[in-house]
Image (cartoon, rainbow, N blue to C red; front, side):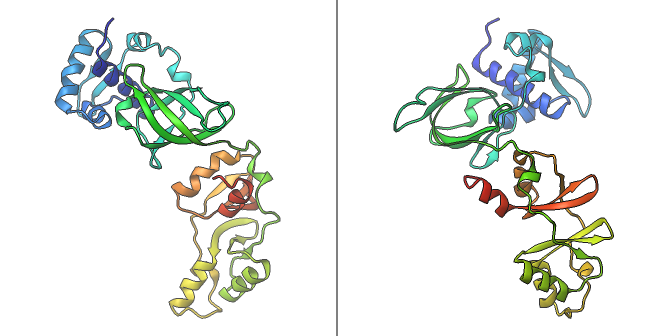
Amino acid sequence: MDLSLIQKDILITLISLYHKQSHAIKGEEIAEVLRRNPGTVRNQMQALKALGLVEGVPGPKGGYTPTTLAYRELNLSNYEQEYQVPIAKDGSRIRGVNVSEIDFTTLCHPDLCHAVVKLIGSVKLFEIGDMISIGPTPVNKLLLSGEIYGKDEVQQELLITISEMISLPKKPIRSYMSSPLCTLPSGANLRDGIHLFNTRHIHGAPVIDGTRLVGIVTLSDIARGIDEGLPLDTPVDLVMTTDVETAPASMQLFEVIGRFKEHEIGRLIIVEGSMPVGILTQSDIIRVFPLL
């Protein structure tokens, strides 16, 4: 069937949001992603319903869901099994858009590296001159960034000049963590923490009760405690953070990189089972992989 550009945009955005959220999608959500008038989206949805491409779900939590015919119409029969390759603009991931294909057009040029990026989602969310980043891709963990110099709204493609292209390390984080682990026992005081940090040239350490991880204390925690008037014999338990971010030693490095930014942390405690075995800091990652 012959769909208009706006109908294709709405249908692709509906499918993208539906697979991300796993529930019916309201017309207002689609309108927000596409930067369209909600009334326009609702009108087009009626046409798409008449064509059998979407179904309406009534009720307060209702909205629209795509039909099997919609997937066939857009050649997305395997969409549910496909890996989601994110795309971000100015450091923020674009909701409802997935990269389906990257075609390098001038890979061997001595000065330029161009690529055509095919999207599942609307190219209307991007403008010429935008700086974008893509990845990681599923097999080679490719991460690239560049500037948009053109776009094709019919084929849903972006033309970009690539400024950086890297393949993320695939080794587990046990290969990059600092070990053996420097720890403080539960009940150690601020003076003990300062001594450990000075002698081992570190800025943070987990606090262990027997073999159990109970918290993490940093140089900033101790400095804040002293600034508040706490004496040096104060237990570190009173200034430590008890909500500790951990990761299994078998996890791959690329899987944890985003957690540092997402949770605004400077270090992860690496565990095997429930036993802390190492620590991974932002400095460790930058040392191994300076482009990040």
